Image 1 (cartoon, rainbow, N blue to C red):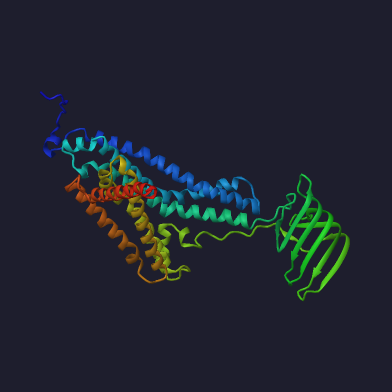
Image 2: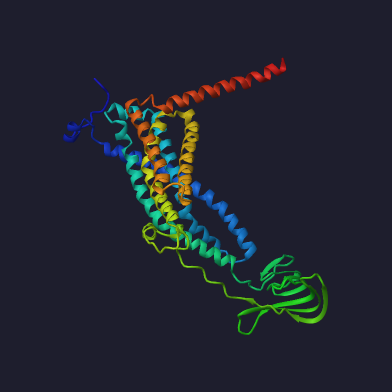
Length: 418
């Protein structure tokens, strides 16, 4: 008598030939997939954001600005980097789960109960469909607003008025062609000693000013910043190269610095700042200031990137079934190559559509169609021959190649000693 537990068979299971309790299996697969998906997204997002945050700190160090600007700019970059990380993280999570199920013989157990490869992969397809809807929201609506918000903050940092403070022994770009430094500065950053100022005038003259002391402040209306210098020398070199020397006891530079930051443009100056609805409207507006080719390429590229997510399970499942523990690295490397080539094909089609070499539907949808056909063919082969899909033979050839290279590497020291 068998030791296997008796599984109750429902009326639907008897009719379809699929055992009951498959919803538990679906929940189990989804739960196991969401764990590596969350970890992969977190790791990739942190890595991408840390690199950009370091650049933002450098930007603020040069142009000045409060610390919270870095946080706000980094927060507005999250939708952009999330769109980059989501396909790779989704694929890796499915690949890891399927390969682990294969190593633990859980795939064989599921198939022995009558579950086919498409039925086992159904939770992945559900998850891919949900991520597709999320991607449409992300690419179509969240990213345009976050891009504009990031550009607006960046504009404010770059064009922010100088706050009339000078760090000690540091060169400061004060705007309007003026650079200044001071050897000693009080805690406020406005009382200076041993001042050096280099100024390029609009008429081509070059002024170099040194002073024993100086003071930075605002005019009574608080609309301009003025520099008042004491006990110094100013050398004015004309555009023709003639120098003029001026000694002074007190001098206020005659060129004020405006405190007002120029307003940033309205959203929509770039096709990347338009939502899907706005892109569609601009594409069919004959009076639009944006190029119809660029608008069409952006619209179709966003749709294709979102529709790619449901295709990834068709590629990850057969690859995971073919990968064993020693082949996970090969699988991840091959997946990275496939996804990078596909992403560059979409970008190439988008670029060709931008310049009018090909229509946007042809340049963007043809790579998508070829990728979809490849995924469907591989998934069907995995369904017909679960243990003999093309990835399995590819991994075997890579294993043989690595073994031969290893043997050659081990022989080289022996031959050199001989």
